[in-house]
Structures are given as C-alpha cells and as structure tokens.
Image (tube, rainbow, N blue to C red; front, side):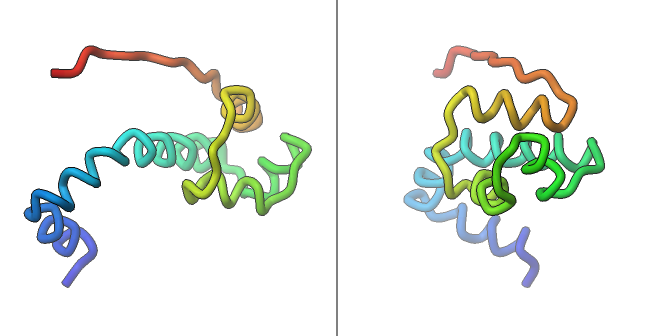
Length: 92
C-alpha cells in the first residue's frame, strides 16, 4: 500500500480527519519551507550557514519539530532568496 493510499484510508476516519485538519496549517508551512530551499538549490547545511545557525535547527524546522518565530521564518526565506508574506482568508 502506498503512503498516499494509506493517508486516504486513514482520513476516512472522522477523528483522524479532524486532527489532520488541525495540523493543516503546519503541514503547509513545512511544504513552503521545503519548496523554498529546493527551488533555491540549497542544502540544509547551506541554509544554516546563511542563517548563522546549526544544520540541526534547520532539520527540526523542516520536520515541524520547532515553534519558529516570525523572525526565524523571515531569516529562512531570505537565506533561500525568497520574500516571506503573510496572507489570510475567512473560514466558514
């Protein structure tokens, strides 16, 4: 069974879907961080060097094992050559 199929099957459970929805913003943030770094063609080590931090901090950030400040997110984006913006939309 592929990871995609496993995810689809798990999300059929309303309790799992509810928890997944709670984390959706965090998942989008992680995806955005990874997209910036890969589009920039950088390694975690290179981003860490540009941010003057350790590679382990970048790894934790990209795994969702950190609670980054806005300042940290801005530094990460700039290290990858991106500008970070914040947007919002009304939910149901």
